[in-house]
Image 1 (spheres, rainbow, N blue to C red):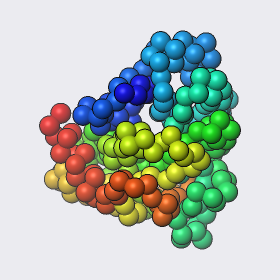
Image 2: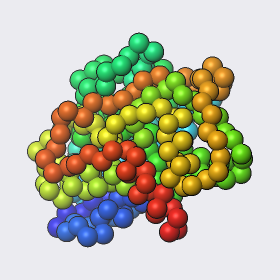
Image 3: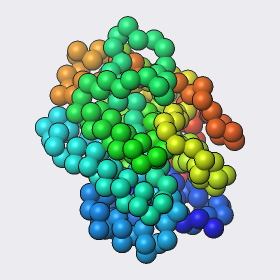
Length: 285
């Protein structure tokens, strides 16, 4: 039996990993940021030794894209320096690090229309993306696995799906950006892929960058429209442009990730189907 530590264990992906691991043969231990501060090497060392960890799945991150523009140093401290600390301690203990990254490491200009591959050069256009790109380098330097995903949401936590459900229930109409294209991805889908990677033993023989998202692509407007439709909410979702919805952080206009490099046993679900499952789970909660 393997012991797997999950950092950021109270976040949306951390909670999804706990759900996905309920019937697996291995022991998954979710640690909150107060249990394990990824910027503190002594704390990392203590937890790895205490739990006799074989694998660390790093879900801990600074994820507020807007606030990162005002706090770039803090984003770097967690997303770069924290991953560097994790990488160093994991390598010293011969523990495999699986690090979660993002499509926002890419710039995605308006002329882009083909999915980004794992070998494409990163070119982030906001502070969050730059900090995550630096974190990838730290994880890769220790022969870790970097899993990039995109537009992550879950039945719990702070995310686009839950936000749209809340504001759609409170308003007759809402407007959502329709000129940014990517792939909505359920944390439940990603968690199943990660637990399969670990439980199958595949993680031990690979390193480098993997891409995982749900299937297909769409805009934020299409994502929001499907959320409202599936939840049967009487609210009109109107499209708008990025220019109309001014934000501090620039977002990629196109950030679809290529998934042609597949791991045996991992299936890709269309994002609309994964969203339906998530909303059904929210209704049960």
